[in-house]
Length: 528
Image 1 (cartoon, rainbow, N blue to C red):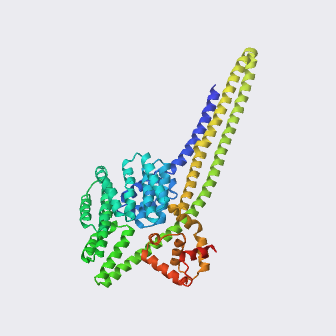
Image 2 (cartoon, helix red, strand yellow):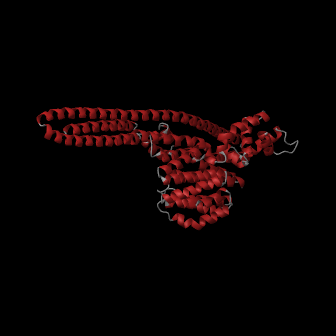
Image 3 (tube, helix red, strand yellow):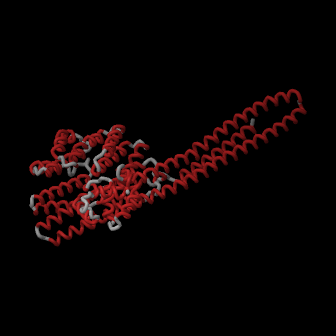
């Protein structure tokens, strides 16, 4: 039995070496190396967005190779940063990825938060079933996570929707009915602060100065609450100051308007893109009313520069997403080729090991034959019988060993290299599906932008070559039945500016002569 044991040990050594080689290759990738970048980005996402983005951009692409298991957090942080910079296309894409990976990683808290962010952004653009689908998702994920606070935020959304739709009295009624409940959430005062913010803003719009000041003062008592992130408090506070300045301007109380704007300017770093635009607009309008044309023009110039920057960022984001899709497709082909090479290597290794087993088996058989001939001379009858019994047992043991080893080789090819490569390919397939959905952010909008905008612009140029790029973009959104307000949000322009562009389009296309509407003209021109 000594020779059989040595053979088994040699084979087992070869198998262990194969595992060690495969394991060393996997460990060399060091997938946890970049997790600290996510933690750092999470620290700075509100206080220093540029630094947070640098941390995330330091993670090699595709991120699935370096931060497997933390992709949901990675994409959630990306979405939060794009929200601050006003890059709508990237925002939707990142939050959708956060939802997808949150579900895959069973990180339901992140999936719920990303779904809620998708809802609030989608609802502000288009109040259709797409937005409410995200809200339902948030409720499902928070339920799976047993996140009671998250479910409270979901329940605040009807009041938020009324707030967004300027149904201020309805919003107040919903908020006041649950205000005590929000206040009693001791471990997170954010929900109480958010309710106070909406109440204050609603009463400002209703010109109810007494109640707006009452809830604003209550809101300010939460400034140093340890359960509220300073960024959240300051961003809501600056919005309320801007809202108050707008009301003061409407009442021609210009000194109060400037005072509120000065208060807001001290927290300008906490303004989001919509607030920044309103901030510049109110400043310019206020100075124009008091006769300081130089300052009014200065703030108008600042507003134009900011809107131009936002437009350029959104356009570059669309090109970048398209470029990344092409890059991912190429990487997918490379990974597929790697998978084939690794599969061939695994199969070759199995074949080599099987050959070694056969060689050992043949050598073992020859040695047994020699031993049998030698001992037959000494005791041909008795020894031959005993040796034959031992031989049968050893051969049977060897056959069992070969069968067992074949199973082990098959398991190696499945669980070590091949299966791992299969997972890697699955992950790469998942990366391709997300670029295309850049524009699923809003399924009715971004899908069309991604799939059919080229044909639209070609047909439009053939019909009306005199249109500028901006006018062509506005025509595109009108063709999709977008309202002026929705177009203004996406192009980062005022509603008045969009109305002015539509007026110029009617003149330029000479539609007044036959009384045809601009939308009807676009449908005829593009579909002809």
